[in-house]
Image (cartoon, rainbow over all chains, first blue to last red; front, side, top):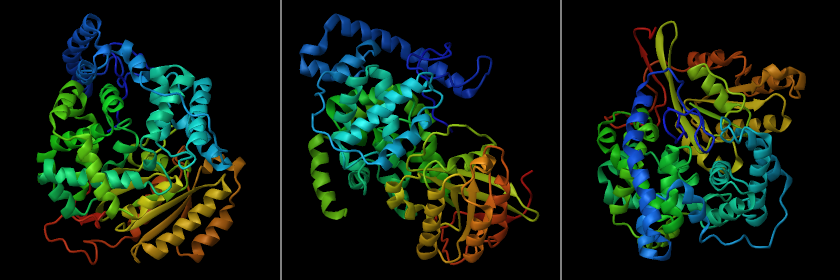
Length: 320
Length: 188
Protein backbone atom coordinates (compact mmCIF):
# COMPACT_ATOMS: atom_id res chain seq x y z
CA UNK A 1 0.00 0.00 0.00
CA UNK A 2 2.19 2.78 -1.21
CA UNK A 3 1.06 6.37 -1.29
CA UNK A 4 1.30 7.93 -4.68
CA UNK A 5 2.11 11.58 -5.05
CA UNK A 6 1.00 12.00 -8.60
CA UNK A 7 -1.67 14.69 -8.95
CA UNK A 8 -2.17 15.53 -12.59
CA UNK A 9 -4.55 14.30 -15.31
CA UNK A 10 -4.45 10.49 -15.42
CA UNK A 11 -3.13 10.47 -18.98
CA UNK A 12 0.20 12.18 -18.39
CA UNK A 13 3.40 10.41 -17.37
CA UNK A 14 4.64 13.05 -14.95
CA UNK A 15 2.69 15.74 -13.10
CA UNK A 16 3.59 19.43 -12.70
CA UNK A 17 5.59 18.76 -9.56
CA UNK A 18 7.67 16.01 -11.16
CA UNK A 19 5.94 13.00 -9.66
CA UNK A 20 5.58 9.94 -11.84
CA UNK A 21 2.27 8.37 -12.70
CA UNK A 22 1.97 5.35 -10.42
CA UNK A 23 0.78 2.89 -13.07
CA UNK A 24 2.03 1.99 -16.50
CA UNK A 25 0.22 3.18 -19.59
CA UNK A 26 -1.45 -0.09 -20.48
CA UNK A 27 -2.12 -1.41 -17.05
CA UNK A 28 -5.77 -1.68 -16.07
CA UNK A 29 -6.01 -1.64 -12.33
CA UNK A 30 -8.51 -0.75 -9.69
CA UNK A 31 -6.31 2.02 -8.32
CA UNK A 32 -6.07 3.54 -11.75
CA UNK A 33 -9.82 3.31 -12.25
CA UNK A 34 -10.39 4.96 -8.87
CA UNK A 35 -7.99 7.72 -9.75
CA UNK A 36 -9.63 8.33 -13.11
CA UNK A 37 -13.08 8.45 -11.55
CA UNK A 38 -11.89 10.88 -8.92
CA UNK A 39 -10.12 13.08 -11.42
CA UNK A 40 -13.20 13.23 -13.64
CA UNK A 41 -15.20 14.53 -10.69
CA UNK A 42 -12.47 16.86 -9.44
CA UNK A 43 -11.50 18.59 -12.66
CA UNK A 44 -14.77 20.58 -12.99
CA UNK A 45 -14.29 21.77 -9.38
CA UNK A 46 -10.77 22.97 -10.15
CA UNK A 47 -11.91 24.75 -13.28
CA UNK A 48 -14.82 26.40 -11.48
CA UNK A 49 -12.65 27.52 -8.55
CA UNK A 50 -10.11 29.06 -10.82
CA UNK A 51 -12.69 31.10 -12.66
CA UNK A 52 -14.19 32.23 -9.33
CA UNK A 53 -10.75 33.35 -8.12
CA UNK A 54 -10.26 35.32 -11.29
CA UNK A 55 -13.68 36.91 -11.14
CA UNK A 56 -13.89 37.74 -7.45
CA UNK A 57 -10.25 38.24 -6.46
CA UNK A 58 -10.70 37.25 -2.80
CA UNK A 59 -7.31 38.50 -1.65
CA UNK A 60 -8.52 41.81 -0.25
CA UNK A 61 -11.33 40.45 1.91
CA UNK A 62 -10.19 38.27 4.80
CA UNK A 63 -13.49 36.41 5.27
CA UNK A 64 -13.96 35.80 1.60
CA UNK A 65 -10.34 34.67 1.41
CA UNK A 66 -10.80 32.07 4.14
CA UNK A 67 -13.75 30.62 2.28
CA UNK A 68 -11.85 30.60 -0.97
CA UNK A 69 -8.77 29.02 0.58
CA UNK A 70 -10.84 26.22 2.07
CA UNK A 71 -12.30 25.51 -1.35
CA UNK A 72 -8.80 25.14 -2.75
CA UNK A 73 -6.22 27.63 -3.99
CA UNK A 74 -5.83 27.18 -7.75
CA UNK A 75 -2.44 25.76 -8.50
CA UNK A 76 -1.18 28.86 -10.34
CA UNK A 77 -1.91 31.07 -7.30
CA UNK A 78 -0.80 28.64 -4.63
CA UNK A 79 2.79 29.79 -4.46
CA UNK A 80 1.83 33.47 -3.96
CA UNK A 81 -0.85 32.68 -1.43
CA UNK A 82 1.36 30.41 0.62
CA UNK A 83 4.02 33.10 0.75
CA UNK A 84 1.59 35.93 1.38
CA UNK A 85 1.95 36.11 5.17
CA UNK A 86 5.35 34.51 5.40
CA UNK A 87 8.03 36.64 7.07
CA UNK A 88 11.66 36.52 5.96
CA UNK A 89 13.73 34.30 8.24
CA UNK A 90 15.55 36.02 11.10
CA UNK A 91 19.20 36.99 10.75
CA UNK A 92 20.40 35.18 13.81
CA UNK A 93 22.12 31.86 13.03
CA UNK A 94 23.70 29.14 15.10
CA UNK A 95 26.51 26.77 14.29
CA UNK A 96 25.40 23.42 12.91
CA UNK A 97 27.12 20.34 14.39
CA UNK A 98 28.75 17.81 12.05
CA UNK A 99 26.44 14.95 12.93
CA UNK A 100 23.46 17.05 11.83
CA UNK A 101 25.10 17.73 8.48
CA UNK A 102 25.82 14.03 8.13
CA UNK A 103 22.23 13.07 8.91
CA UNK A 104 20.93 15.58 6.37
CA UNK A 105 23.29 14.29 3.67
CA UNK A 106 22.17 10.74 4.25
CA UNK A 107 18.53 11.62 3.58
CA UNK A 108 18.94 13.76 0.46
CA UNK A 109 18.80 10.88 -2.05
CA UNK A 110 16.15 9.24 0.14
CA UNK A 111 13.62 12.07 -0.27
CA UNK A 112 11.09 11.30 -3.02
CA UNK A 113 13.73 9.31 -4.93
CA UNK A 114 11.37 8.87 -7.88
CA UNK A 115 10.63 12.56 -8.31
CA UNK A 116 11.98 13.86 -11.57
CA UNK A 117 13.39 17.04 -9.99
CA UNK A 118 14.65 15.61 -6.71
CA UNK A 119 16.41 12.82 -8.57
CA UNK A 120 18.69 15.53 -9.87
CA UNK A 121 21.76 16.18 -7.77
CA UNK A 122 21.42 19.94 -8.14
CA UNK A 123 17.93 19.95 -6.63
CA UNK A 124 19.11 17.61 -3.89
CA UNK A 125 21.71 20.22 -3.00
CA UNK A 126 18.98 22.87 -2.78
CA UNK A 127 17.07 20.56 -0.46
CA UNK A 128 20.25 20.12 1.57
CA UNK A 129 20.66 23.88 1.91
CA UNK A 130 17.04 24.25 3.03
CA UNK A 131 17.48 21.61 5.73
CA UNK A 132 20.81 23.13 6.75
CA UNK A 133 19.21 26.59 7.01
CA UNK A 134 16.56 25.18 9.34
CA UNK A 135 19.27 23.65 11.52
CA UNK A 136 21.04 27.02 11.60
CA UNK A 137 17.90 28.85 12.69
CA UNK A 138 16.33 26.32 15.01
CA UNK A 139 19.17 24.59 16.85
CA UNK A 140 16.73 22.83 19.19
CA UNK A 141 15.67 20.77 16.17
CA UNK A 142 18.83 20.46 14.13
CA UNK A 143 17.55 17.86 11.76
CA UNK A 144 14.62 15.50 12.28
CA UNK A 145 13.75 12.83 9.74
CA UNK A 146 10.45 13.73 8.15
CA UNK A 147 11.45 17.36 7.66
CA UNK A 148 13.07 16.25 4.41
CA UNK A 149 9.65 15.43 2.97
CA UNK A 150 8.11 18.67 4.21
CA UNK A 151 10.95 20.72 2.73
CA UNK A 152 10.80 18.71 -0.48
CA UNK A 153 7.13 19.56 -1.07
CA UNK A 154 7.73 23.24 -0.30
CA UNK A 155 10.61 23.38 -2.78
CA UNK A 156 8.58 21.71 -5.49
CA UNK A 157 5.59 24.02 -5.03
CA UNK A 158 7.43 27.32 -4.44
CA UNK A 159 10.25 26.63 -6.89
CA UNK A 160 12.43 29.43 -5.49
CA UNK A 161 15.20 28.53 -3.08
CA UNK A 162 15.22 31.55 -0.78
CA UNK A 163 11.45 31.89 -0.53
CA UNK A 164 11.10 28.16 0.05
CA UNK A 165 13.53 28.33 2.93
CA UNK A 166 11.63 31.25 4.48
CA UNK A 167 8.34 29.36 4.29
CA UNK A 168 9.89 26.13 5.53
CA UNK A 169 11.43 27.82 8.58
CA UNK A 170 8.23 29.78 9.22
CA UNK A 171 6.03 26.68 9.14
CA UNK A 172 8.33 24.52 11.23
CA UNK A 173 9.01 27.21 13.83
CA UNK A 174 5.27 27.21 14.58
CA UNK A 175 5.48 23.60 15.73
CA UNK A 176 9.15 23.21 16.53
CA UNK A 177 8.56 21.18 19.67
CA UNK A 178 7.31 18.34 17.43
CA UNK A 179 10.80 17.77 16.09
CA UNK A 180 13.09 18.38 19.07
CA UNK A 181 15.01 15.67 20.85
CA UNK A 182 12.18 14.40 23.02
CA UNK A 183 9.38 15.20 20.52
CA UNK A 184 7.33 16.50 23.38
CA UNK A 185 5.07 18.66 21.20
CA UNK A 186 4.13 15.66 19.10
CA UNK A 187 3.26 13.63 22.16
CA UNK A 188 1.30 16.55 23.60
CA UNK A 189 -0.74 17.06 20.44
CA UNK A 190 -1.47 13.36 20.04
CA UNK A 191 -2.78 13.44 23.59
CA UNK A 192 -4.99 16.36 22.57
CA UNK A 193 -6.19 14.39 19.56
CA UNK A 194 -6.97 11.47 21.85
CA UNK A 195 -9.21 13.70 24.00
CA UNK A 196 -10.93 15.10 20.92
CA UNK A 197 -11.51 11.60 19.57
CA UNK A 198 -13.34 10.64 22.75
CA UNK A 199 -15.82 13.31 21.77
CA UNK A 200 -15.85 13.00 17.99
CA UNK A 201 -15.17 9.32 17.39
CA UNK A 202 -15.89 7.55 20.69
CA UNK A 203 -16.34 4.12 19.13
CA UNK A 204 -12.85 4.14 17.70
CA UNK A 205 -11.13 5.39 20.79
CA UNK A 206 -12.73 2.62 22.84
CA UNK A 207 -11.21 0.02 20.54
CA UNK A 208 -7.82 1.70 20.55
CA UNK A 209 -7.76 2.07 24.32
CA UNK A 210 -8.77 -1.53 24.77
CA UNK A 211 -6.01 -2.66 22.45
CA UNK A 212 -3.48 -0.43 24.13
CA UNK A 213 -2.32 1.08 20.86
CA UNK A 214 -0.99 4.60 21.21
CA UNK A 215 -1.69 7.19 18.57
CA UNK A 216 2.07 7.86 18.26
CA UNK A 217 2.42 4.39 16.89
CA UNK A 218 -0.43 4.72 14.45
CA UNK A 219 -0.30 8.23 13.10
CA UNK A 220 2.72 10.07 14.47
CA UNK A 221 3.78 10.54 10.89
CA UNK A 222 0.56 12.36 9.95
CA UNK A 223 1.48 15.20 12.29
CA UNK A 224 5.25 15.16 11.75
CA UNK A 225 5.00 15.36 7.98
CA UNK A 226 1.70 17.25 7.89
CA UNK A 227 0.21 14.34 5.94
CA UNK A 228 2.91 14.26 3.26
CA UNK A 229 3.74 10.60 2.52
CA UNK A 230 0.49 9.54 4.19
CA UNK A 231 -2.17 10.95 1.85
CA UNK A 232 -2.37 11.56 -1.91
CA UNK A 233 -0.51 14.74 -2.80
CA UNK A 234 -3.48 16.74 -4.07
CA UNK A 235 -5.13 16.13 -0.72
CA UNK A 236 -1.97 17.19 1.08
CA UNK A 237 -1.83 20.45 -0.88
CA UNK A 238 -5.47 21.20 -0.10
CA UNK A 239 -4.87 20.53 3.59
CA UNK A 240 -1.78 22.75 3.56
CA UNK A 241 -3.83 25.60 2.04
CA UNK A 242 -5.97 25.51 5.18
CA UNK A 243 -3.11 24.76 7.56
CA UNK A 244 -1.09 27.74 6.36
CA UNK A 245 -4.08 30.08 6.66
CA UNK A 246 -5.76 28.75 9.79
CA UNK A 247 -3.10 26.83 11.69
CA UNK A 248 -2.72 23.53 13.50
CA UNK A 249 -6.43 23.01 14.13
CA UNK A 250 -6.47 21.43 10.67
CA UNK A 251 -4.12 18.65 11.74
CA UNK A 252 -6.75 17.60 14.28
CA UNK A 253 -9.75 18.10 12.02
CA UNK A 254 -8.28 16.03 9.22
CA UNK A 255 -7.17 13.25 11.56
CA UNK A 256 -10.64 12.97 13.05
CA UNK A 257 -12.36 12.82 9.67
CA UNK A 258 -9.89 10.19 8.45
CA UNK A 259 -10.48 8.07 11.54
CA UNK A 260 -14.23 8.47 11.16
CA UNK A 261 -14.01 7.18 7.61
CA UNK A 262 -12.86 3.81 8.95
CA UNK A 263 -14.94 3.73 12.15
CA UNK A 264 -17.00 0.71 11.12
CA UNK A 265 -13.98 -1.26 10.01
CA UNK A 266 -12.14 -0.52 13.22
CA UNK A 267 -15.05 -1.52 15.43
CA UNK A 268 -15.20 -4.84 13.62
CA UNK A 269 -11.46 -5.47 13.72
CA UNK A 270 -10.48 -8.62 15.56
CA UNK A 271 -6.78 -8.09 16.06
CA UNK A 272 -4.12 -5.42 16.33
CA UNK A 273 -2.85 -6.57 12.99
CA UNK A 274 -6.21 -5.74 11.40
CA UNK A 275 -6.40 -2.33 13.05
CA UNK A 276 -2.95 -1.42 11.80
CA UNK A 277 -3.74 -2.57 8.31
CA UNK A 278 -6.95 -0.52 8.27
CA UNK A 279 -5.12 2.61 9.42
CA UNK A 280 -2.38 2.12 6.86
CA UNK A 281 -4.93 1.75 4.09
CA UNK A 282 -6.48 5.14 4.85
CA UNK A 283 -3.94 6.80 2.57
CA UNK A 284 -5.30 5.03 -0.48
CA UNK A 285 -8.95 5.16 0.52
CA UNK A 286 -11.72 7.02 -1.25
CA UNK A 287 -12.06 9.37 1.70
CA UNK A 288 -8.51 10.60 1.36
CA UNK A 289 -8.57 10.78 -2.43
CA UNK A 290 -11.75 12.87 -2.65
CA UNK A 291 -10.00 15.88 -1.15
CA UNK A 292 -12.69 18.45 -1.84
CA UNK A 293 -15.26 16.46 0.11
CA UNK A 294 -12.71 15.75 2.84
CA UNK A 295 -12.03 19.45 3.36
CA UNK A 296 -15.76 20.25 3.51
CA UNK A 297 -16.25 17.58 6.18
CA UNK A 298 -13.32 18.98 8.16
CA UNK A 299 -14.61 22.53 7.87
CA UNK A 300 -17.94 21.40 9.33
CA UNK A 301 -16.33 19.93 12.43
CA UNK A 302 -16.73 22.36 15.28
CA UNK A 303 -13.23 22.47 16.68
CA UNK A 304 -11.65 25.87 17.16
CA UNK A 305 -8.08 27.01 17.59
CA UNK A 306 -8.96 28.18 21.11
CA UNK A 307 -10.19 24.74 22.03
CA UNK A 308 -6.89 23.26 20.88
CA UNK A 309 -4.95 25.76 22.98
CA UNK A 310 -7.01 24.90 26.07
CA UNK A 311 -6.49 21.19 25.58
CA UNK A 312 -2.80 21.70 24.97
CA UNK A 313 -2.45 23.54 28.27
CA UNK A 314 -4.21 20.64 29.95
CA UNK A 315 -2.03 18.07 28.17
CA UNK A 316 1.16 19.86 29.11
CA UNK A 317 0.44 19.14 32.76
CA UNK A 318 0.30 15.43 32.05
CA UNK A 319 2.91 14.79 29.34
CA UNK A 320 6.45 14.94 30.65
CA UNK B 1 8.78 -8.54 15.45
CA UNK B 2 10.67 -5.33 15.29
CA UNK B 3 13.63 -4.07 13.24
CA UNK B 4 16.02 -1.74 14.99
CA UNK B 5 19.27 -0.07 14.00
CA UNK B 6 20.88 3.14 12.91
CA UNK B 7 19.60 5.32 10.09
CA UNK B 8 20.21 4.08 6.52
CA UNK B 9 21.63 0.65 7.42
CA UNK B 10 18.88 -1.04 5.39
CA UNK B 11 16.09 -1.96 7.80
CA UNK B 12 13.30 -1.02 5.38
CA UNK B 13 15.19 -2.59 2.49
CA UNK B 14 15.45 -5.92 4.32
CA UNK B 15 11.73 -5.87 5.05
CA UNK B 16 10.85 -4.83 1.52
CA UNK B 17 12.98 -7.63 0.12
CA UNK B 18 11.43 -10.16 2.47
CA UNK B 19 7.81 -9.05 2.04
CA UNK B 20 7.71 -7.96 -1.60
CA UNK B 21 10.92 -9.25 -3.14
CA UNK B 22 11.83 -5.71 -4.20
CA UNK B 23 14.87 -3.50 -3.77
CA UNK B 24 15.34 0.23 -4.34
CA UNK B 25 18.82 1.72 -4.46
CA UNK B 26 17.43 4.74 -2.63
CA UNK B 27 14.81 3.68 -0.14
CA UNK B 28 12.77 6.56 1.33
CA UNK B 29 13.58 7.33 4.94
CA UNK B 30 11.08 5.76 7.34
CA UNK B 31 9.24 8.23 9.56
CA UNK B 32 7.99 6.86 12.87
CA UNK B 33 7.51 3.27 11.87
CA UNK B 34 5.90 1.15 9.19
CA UNK B 35 3.91 -2.02 9.78
CA UNK B 36 4.03 -4.93 7.35
CA UNK B 37 2.95 -8.54 7.41
CA UNK B 38 4.13 -11.64 5.61
CA UNK B 39 2.92 -15.21 5.90
CA UNK B 40 5.30 -18.05 5.20
CA UNK B 41 5.23 -21.79 5.68
CA UNK B 42 7.72 -23.81 7.58
CA UNK B 43 7.71 -27.59 7.41
CA UNK B 44 4.97 -28.06 9.93
CA UNK B 45 3.43 -24.70 10.62
CA UNK B 46 2.36 -21.48 8.98
CA UNK B 47 3.98 -18.42 10.43
CA UNK B 48 2.59 -14.96 10.11
CA UNK B 49 5.21 -12.29 10.53
CA UNK B 50 3.94 -8.97 11.84
CA UNK B 51 6.80 -6.60 11.37
CA UNK B 52 7.45 -3.14 12.77
CA UNK B 53 10.04 -1.37 10.70
CA UNK B 54 11.23 1.57 12.78
CA UNK B 55 12.89 4.92 12.04
CA UNK B 56 16.62 4.93 12.62
CA UNK B 57 17.19 8.46 13.85
CA UNK B 58 18.17 8.80 17.48
CA UNK B 59 15.25 11.02 18.50
CA UNK B 60 12.70 8.46 17.38
CA UNK B 61 14.33 6.22 19.94
CA UNK B 62 11.89 7.44 22.59
CA UNK B 63 9.10 5.74 20.62
CA UNK B 64 10.97 2.46 20.17
CA UNK B 65 9.84 0.75 23.41
CA UNK B 66 6.27 0.87 22.13
CA UNK B 67 7.32 -1.32 19.26
CA UNK B 68 9.59 -3.80 20.99
CA UNK B 69 7.97 -4.13 24.40
CA UNK B 70 5.65 -6.92 23.29
CA UNK B 71 7.68 -8.30 20.41
CA UNK B 72 8.73 -11.90 20.36
CA UNK B 73 11.62 -11.21 18.06
CA UNK B 74 13.91 -8.43 16.94
CA UNK B 75 16.36 -8.00 14.11
CA UNK B 76 19.06 -5.53 14.98
CA UNK B 77 20.64 -4.28 11.79
CA UNK B 78 24.01 -2.65 11.10
CA UNK B 79 25.88 -1.78 7.94
CA UNK B 80 29.13 -3.73 7.44
CA UNK B 81 30.68 -0.63 5.86
CA UNK B 82 29.95 1.56 8.88
CA UNK B 83 31.69 0.97 12.21
CA UNK B 84 29.45 3.38 14.10
CA UNK B 85 26.35 1.49 13.04
CA UNK B 86 27.82 -1.67 14.60
CA UNK B 87 28.33 0.17 17.87
CA UNK B 88 24.72 1.40 17.71
CA UNK B 89 23.58 -2.16 17.07
CA UNK B 90 25.36 -3.29 20.24
CA UNK B 91 23.55 -0.58 22.15
CA UNK B 92 20.22 -1.80 20.80
CA UNK B 93 21.04 -5.35 21.84
CA UNK B 94 21.85 -4.13 25.35
CA UNK B 95 18.63 -2.18 25.53
CA UNK B 96 16.60 -5.18 24.37
CA UNK B 97 18.31 -7.47 26.88
CA UNK B 98 17.44 -5.00 29.59
CA UNK B 99 13.97 -3.83 28.60
CA UNK B 100 12.28 -6.26 26.24
CA UNK B 101 10.55 -9.52 27.10
CA UNK B 102 13.11 -11.98 28.51
CA UNK B 103 12.24 -14.60 25.89
CA UNK B 104 12.75 -12.32 22.93
CA UNK B 105 14.67 -13.88 20.04
CA UNK B 106 17.28 -11.44 18.79
CA UNK B 107 19.03 -11.66 15.45
CA UNK B 108 21.95 -9.49 14.44
CA UNK B 109 22.11 -8.71 10.73
CA UNK B 110 25.22 -7.22 9.09
CA UNK B 111 23.62 -5.72 6.01
CA UNK B 112 25.12 -4.45 2.73
CA UNK B 113 27.22 -7.61 2.46
CA UNK B 114 27.37 -7.00 -1.30
CA UNK B 115 29.70 -4.07 -0.59
CA UNK B 116 32.45 -6.31 0.79
CA UNK B 117 35.17 -4.11 -0.74
CA UNK B 118 34.14 -1.31 1.64
CA UNK B 119 33.83 -3.57 4.64
CA UNK B 120 35.02 -2.23 7.98
CA UNK B 121 33.21 -4.57 10.38
CA UNK B 122 34.80 -8.01 10.15
CA UNK B 123 32.60 -11.08 10.05
CA UNK B 124 34.59 -12.74 12.83
CA UNK B 125 34.24 -9.76 15.14
CA UNK B 126 30.46 -9.58 14.76
CA UNK B 127 30.12 -13.35 14.95
CA UNK B 128 32.09 -13.49 18.20
CA UNK B 129 29.94 -10.71 19.65
CA UNK B 130 26.77 -12.55 18.60
CA UNK B 131 27.98 -15.79 20.19
CA UNK B 132 28.81 -14.07 23.45
CA UNK B 133 25.31 -12.63 23.58
CA UNK B 134 23.47 -15.68 22.25
CA UNK B 135 22.17 -13.87 19.18
CA UNK B 136 21.41 -15.33 15.79
CA UNK B 137 23.84 -13.79 13.34
CA UNK B 138 23.97 -13.45 9.58
CA UNK B 139 25.45 -11.09 7.07
CA UNK B 140 22.74 -10.06 4.65
CA UNK B 141 22.26 -8.11 1.48
CA UNK B 142 18.86 -6.65 0.72
CA UNK B 143 20.25 -5.76 -2.69
CA UNK B 144 21.21 -9.29 -3.78
CA UNK B 145 18.73 -10.88 -1.32
CA UNK B 146 21.54 -12.92 0.25
CA UNK B 147 20.42 -14.43 3.58
CA UNK B 148 17.35 -12.21 3.77
CA UNK B 149 14.75 -14.97 3.90
CA UNK B 150 17.16 -17.05 5.93
CA UNK B 151 17.39 -14.58 8.77
CA UNK B 152 13.60 -14.36 9.07
CA UNK B 153 13.29 -18.15 8.85
CA UNK B 154 15.99 -18.71 11.44
CA UNK B 155 13.99 -16.53 13.81
CA UNK B 156 10.74 -18.31 13.04
CA UNK B 157 12.34 -21.67 13.87
CA UNK B 158 13.41 -20.43 17.27
CA UNK B 159 9.97 -19.20 18.24
CA UNK B 160 7.69 -21.36 20.35
CA UNK B 161 4.85 -22.98 18.43
CA UNK B 162 1.30 -22.20 19.47
CA UNK B 163 -0.14 -19.31 21.41
CA UNK B 164 2.28 -16.94 23.02
CA UNK B 165 3.15 -17.68 26.56
CA UNK B 166 1.81 -15.54 29.35
CA UNK B 167 -0.72 -13.57 27.33
CA UNK B 168 -4.36 -13.46 28.11
CA UNK B 169 -6.51 -13.53 25.04
CA UNK B 170 -9.98 -13.05 26.34
CA UNK B 171 -11.49 -11.69 23.22
CA UNK B 172 -9.44 -8.52 23.30
CA UNK B 173 -6.99 -7.58 20.64
CA UNK B 174 -3.58 -8.00 22.08
CA UNK B 175 -0.62 -5.93 21.10
CA UNK B 176 1.71 -8.39 22.76
CA UNK B 177 1.02 -11.05 20.24
CA UNK B 178 2.90 -10.15 17.15
CA UNK B 179 3.27 -13.75 16.03
CA UNK B 180 0.41 -16.06 15.42
CA UNK B 181 1.43 -19.55 14.64
CA UNK B 182 -0.93 -22.27 13.78
CA UNK B 183 -0.31 -25.79 12.75
CA UNK B 184 -2.20 -26.58 9.64
CA UNK B 185 -2.30 -26.25 5.95
CA UNK B 186 0.59 -24.64 4.24
CA UNK B 187 -0.02 -21.34 2.50
CA UNK B 188 1.36 -22.47 -0.84
